[in-house]
Image (cartoon, rainbow over all chains, first blue to last red):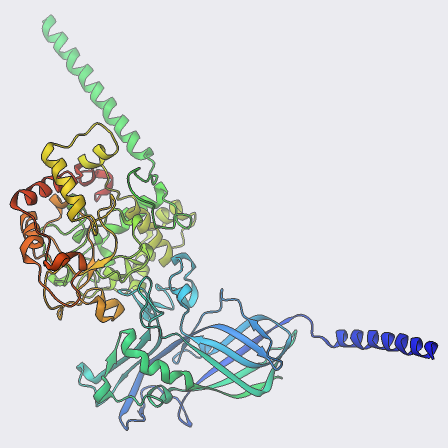
Length: 264
Length: 348
């Protein structure tokens, strides 16, 4: 009986060794890219500039500029484990007028199946106060970021819609919805940094030599819809100050949805 | 005849000597090194020099940019237009800044001086990095009114700048961050700490008169809670009772949007007051006598008035006429004539 037991234990042990080695072989190796495609929409239709759109209040806007920052990406596997994408080089400015900006490709992601995607809409507070020499690419106030930067109140505009609306009483019926505010440098003040958290049953399969694409629908009208229905007539045609932009920041958390994922 | 010969000789020798002096000076100018040295009596600096140390070539480039009017929309206005060296880098005689197209700003141009000791700039503290500061006046519609990206492009397209960037940063490539860093190098060198007071404080042989000493002691008791350290500012924001409503300019609240910050403005330094009239954020006082009288009996109350100005249920800081005069005598010891006459800082 003792002998049988020890044989059993030995075989179990050997078996478990096999299983663990098999598991090891299954583990994914290496890194690959992952692309998030930001597809701006207006409700169920594709988004179009210079076109009349009806917002929740029933008012009309005609958008002439649409830009927003995305950064601080975190990728989540089905088991809940997270991979934080390094911040450096991973600040992106989505511009409706430039198609190439709408594909955000994150490089050197550990191979794996990712079902959750988190990111900040805007620029984190640390980067908002970093040394000027590190403000390159999308964050360069003399370059790509030039119309997304408040010079008088050091900080980035996270989300910007310029439009016209018959309901605007400003010159040329213009509207400027500029959302920014990272919480203040020495005095705590309005923080409009919002983390977007998306997940679904489909996984983006990151592998060496592949580039899965997460196709994200971005319903721009949602920025005016809920929980804070925005009325140009009563809330104003423009805001350039963080505290006035909180309503829109609380709305645009819900602006993003995963539509589908390409793994081929 | 001998006399004339001698005279001729003397003139010749004198002329030769002059030439020597002139050439020595020239030599000195071209080889002058610019190094940031913190005066002993000032507190620790806030600027991050490890990212952008002052170099001679960087300073020279920064100075060229500071005085370059092409950084304004119509090439009329440079930084130096409203920040002149001989008025301690303020817009002397202007209550509020006077920019492009003769447009007026809403606030008094602050001195560009001892910048390395601050990390919040402008009367409202809206700018939190010296390197980012120049973007604000360049883009401000009533100052220089040019998109910063356009300003950088203009410099990029000016061939004469290439050797300056090469000398300062090792490459002819011109970028926004480099332009800003060079301007910071120039601004960081604008150090004023060579007044009679400084020389007294550092035991460099200067002495204060009895009245100036009285003024200093009064100042310590009555003024130094805000005008603290040898920077003569706490670099914080206070409502000093210039107005009782701030609808036209909410000051710090313009940045923070907090009700408790309405009417607060950054404490200005008290150095070089002789050259920086008029005073206060709106330039509303022409003389130091008016300023002292304001604190004695002119302070206007409002919800955010600084607590230091309402001690013992008294509004303001009670000061007898004699005390006011003594404080003014002390304040005059803070004038640094070496600084405003330093030709290295002026337009070349």
